[in-house]
Amino acid sequence: MLASHSRSARTTGVLVSVAAISTGMIGSAPVRAVTGPDVAAGTYASVAKLNIGDRPGSRACTAVLVDERWLATAASCFATAPGEQVPAGKPAMQSTATLSDGRTVEIAELLPRTDRDLTLARLATPATGIAGVRRAAAPADVGATLTAAGFGRTRTEWVPGKLHTGAFTVDSADSTTLSSTGKGTDALCKGDTGGPLMNASGELVAINSRSWQGGCLGTPTTEVRTGAVSARIDDLHDWVQQARALTPGWKTETLVQAGSTLYQGIRLADGSWTGFADVQAKVGDIGGIRTAAAAGVDGDTHVLALGGDGRIRHAIRTAQGRWGGYGDVGAVAGVLGDVTQLSAVSIGADLHVVAVADGRIFHTQRRADGTWSRFGDIASVVGPLGTITHAATASVGGRLHIAAVSGGKAYHASRDSAGHWTGWGDIAQVAGDTGPLTSVTMAGAGNDTHFVIATDDGSRQYHAIRRGDGNWERFGELTDQLGGVQAKSVSAGTVDGELQVAVTTSDNRLLHTIRHTDRTWAPTLPVATGGVTGNFGSIAITGTL
Image 1 (cartoon, rainbow, N blue to C red):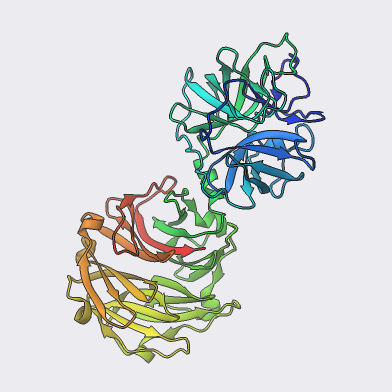
Image 2: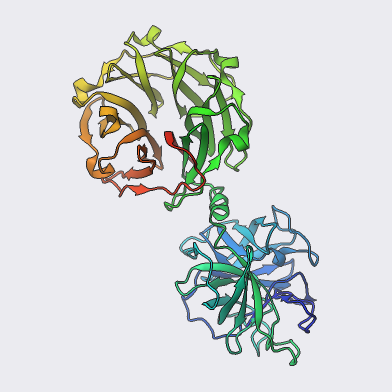
């Protein structure tokens, strides 16, 4: 059976928590151990046993991996007093997780919910080689049969040390909890708190919290109820994803402008995405956002946004997910008139920003110490072009590479670390002619510079490479990769050494693909953009660690 940490298993009119403590029970409402059958070796490998307290076995709970770094479990397992709201951060008591392969790992951090008995717990070292549980995207139906798993007591064993399962029927659900009843004699017992409740597809729908513990060892024989309450997790996809995005490692930071609003989302290394959040709600209102650019500096994301007043702002989202306020770039780098487009890239810890303004192209640099150089007209050092409509940046081998579109053609130049520029080169002469360019984006991967262009008002897209030796691989059309879409905006970025490309389309879709280092392309997939309202405009992607 599954159990929680209850003071008593008597019928007191409330369900009791089922987390076990060697010296007694702690109340607040978790569950004990599932009294069903033992689990075969290798089954439910994502389920872990928790020990909480400074003595082995001082309190026992169950948890389940959502990925190799994070467990989902009941927040009440970590409470130091009944009914306590568990704070975020390091657990108040020493806590460890014993994984299915026998490894014991410290719990380094808690991210609890305030609306239900649920927390995510970050492991100090990853559970490499153990897959996280799949999460359900929809609530369980009333009457459905669910499977609970836990390390709690059974009918006959006080500390079984084995994973057990039990079958439960869904009775009802509200916005945060799910109520169920054990089938036959199956129940949740002490030690089962925090364990998973899974649907017939093996997807996680809830985390066990509290139960009546009928039939569990130590419960009065007069208590026969097997009802339980669990904390729903099926509706918390983005909460889980945002937590996972805090884990160090490669991620694709994404900015999508829709209407006058800028949204930020993250693609994780496993290919899943967070939701998209309104950047102005986090950073501050700058009168709407016309366009934006992004660059990753280690784990931080630098955002350049063109406000409704035509001024360029800069903000930083740290690797810990915290946003700073907008700073006015014009106040430190000079005010530009009639800005239409921005691009940004990092070289080491420095941020390089290019702006298209008044049909010209300007460059500024934010140094690692936070100071800025003044905007300089690139034409004054690279040479004049006609009216510039679009620009892009890339970092390759410590050099800043720039592309500019003028008269429907693309030109390329670069700048070394000492500030010396090359002249413009006509890309068509080395990579092939295409239709008139609408936009250009670029990214550095190894010693190569990748160029992705949109032509013919966005109806065709091409890819070319400038190799490290200065030779070019000619433009190849991306119809097979992108499917002949009408692109409104295209952005390229390097993430973990691979080229990633994202596109917003005229029919209001966001598409994403990857060119691997073996030169093959991944399937182009649509990105769910729940929370984004308005028609898509510009997009910017960048990689962070």
